[in-house]
Length: 103
Figure (cartoon, rainbow, N blue to C red):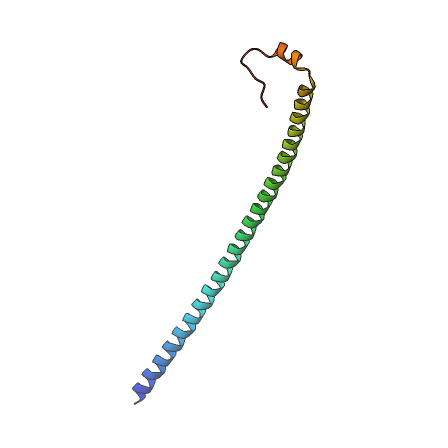
């Protein structure tokens, strides 16, 4: 009987030690998962900020190009109006045969 009680106590202690070890491992794994998730969130936030900055830069560039395009259209219309104001007999002098001036 003494041997059985002793064996039971040893088994109980062994199981308790296993539980404590497993709990410690789980806690360490949870902490590691939290660290990895924080690092992942940080990377995603950094990537998002870079994308937003690139997007803003592209929008600014598009606006500048649109403004430049509008200026060029205005110049084209101005020169077109100036050309149309020139009398036709003078235009014929500078335009060779079978060629037309287009936009």
